[in-house]
Length: 252
Image (cartoon, rainbow, N blue to C red; front, side, top):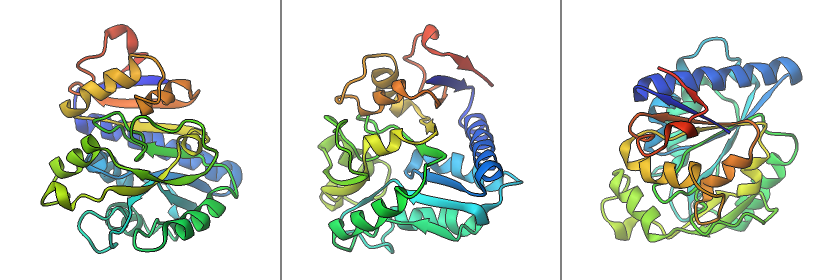
């Protein structure tokens, strides 16, 4: 795992986007296609905006998988991550092959369908974030590090639901769903490269917990410490509580 700290969110986003593009281009060059996992949430806005502007990516050869989605939410709802990915990535660059998680269908049916697709070939690069409670995807603490399933239905804890409210996705806490379909920890860790984008001061406590402490299900994103090709992209605010010795790489 490498930690990269940047002077601003925009510099962080641009660097992460360029690194993501390089991984995608390399996969296409070597195997004729690139398979990616895309994250959502407010922390990914700048990164995805930068990624869609990077030239030289043959998006026709990219296959995209969805990280997580609320159970029971329509893809037309403002908080829908399906809607988010269409608007901020799929439609912008013209990805033709993608696998979204339909929150209105029976979760077991959705999980079976998308799991069968993701297991067909390796994932080249996964884009993820870190929740304010340290979650990775919607795997809240204590996360299941052991399941071999690709996706699972998870219960969202109170801190996670409050984060979704605080980011403005829902009008009240009662409106935030209590369950979601989430990619599992083991499936995320199978990706050849993982780019974890986690800016903003509100993520500083989680960043310290996950990347300056032990690997534990109580800090789900801490598992990224065990991935040989994981890079953590931070701005000064999110890195504020890390000791300088933790930062293996620094830029901008």
